Image 1 (cartoon, rainbow, N blue to C red):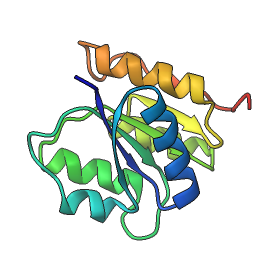
Image 2: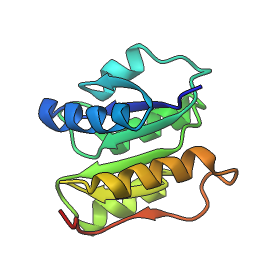
Image 3: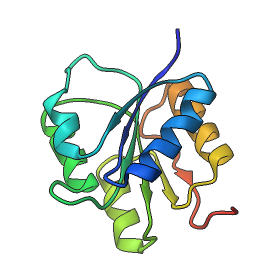
Image 4: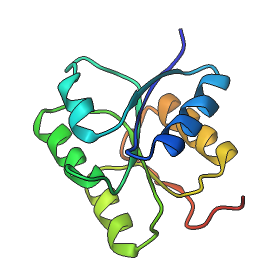
Length: 135
């Protein structure tokens, strides 16, 4: 059974690019243009991995993490951001993100991180991610 990955990014081009990469790797991908769009279709029993843009209009990625925690939805989360400000990274990890990648995301590194979090039996353990992209 393919692994489900939820991609939330207000940037349509970035969202579709990540979704295309993940589908090519065999994942079942669901795309959302906003945090609210994801919340509107939220199923408490959902499983898989969430790839989330840190900064979006309306509810930000970090705010979405807080809302998921409040709803007791426990999904491994990888945060992506065009900004690599230490504050954003700190907030993401503080809210439970297991990875952080700077846009443009290295596709191989992202696929490796998703494979790691989906196979991990220790959610919230080691952190994955890069501070810069190699291309």
